[in-house]
Length: 347
Image (tube, rainbow, N blue to C red):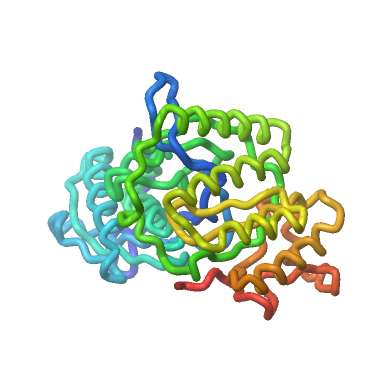
């Protein structure tokens, strides 16, 4: 890594200041245990991207203080604090400067504990802010390495490209799955009453050879779905992965959610394998998709499953769901309507 030849921007107090940002995600399309290129088993996942909520960070570097003189606002963000210390050490070495302390300020609107990558978003935004204060831009691989060291496992939010199968405990890409996801309309909701999931309390799971073969089959199908733009096949993979995830999560509403998706002609369902967030996946090209989404929302309400927001993975169709040109009776309730809150609730 060669430092970028630019000075850090001073903050209000004249100290070098950097900023960083990272998005969140909406749980996973696929998560399990896979084989890497050497035939070694690796935990891996494919996340469902979601525009909107994210984490922002500002790091004010104080060269006159030792590295341990680090304050974090708000307090209690231990993973972000570790990330800042690790990033300072790395960036100081790259820029041939002495590591120092400073103040890290975090902002964001990602609900905690729902499986949307809130901690990884904080960590990545922090690493980027520290690097920016040193006049550096780190590679995604370096950011991933620091993120894993800070929180033991991380989501691939540092990658700006297409969908990947990502080894979250190692911070590396197992397979690039294509330039972009097929367009999806996602009706977001919360399982388990929206209660945060403590992943440390989940039952230990040791996958056998049959489990690995099953996940590899899903990987092959997902690869095909990405290559051909087959939303129905992608939905089958996501549903199968979600169903396997219930062995640990055990959400009591999952079967009702899967039944709603089937009755309304959805491609499938997806969940956060480490949280409560879930989604019903629709193909926007299917006739009558707006009516299907509207009926899906009513069915979720009937079953007591809180709906959160409806969004699309295709930015070219964002106007269709949220724009002012489609506020008639044929438009499904979107994130700006009174039916549901504009953001995922901070439960």
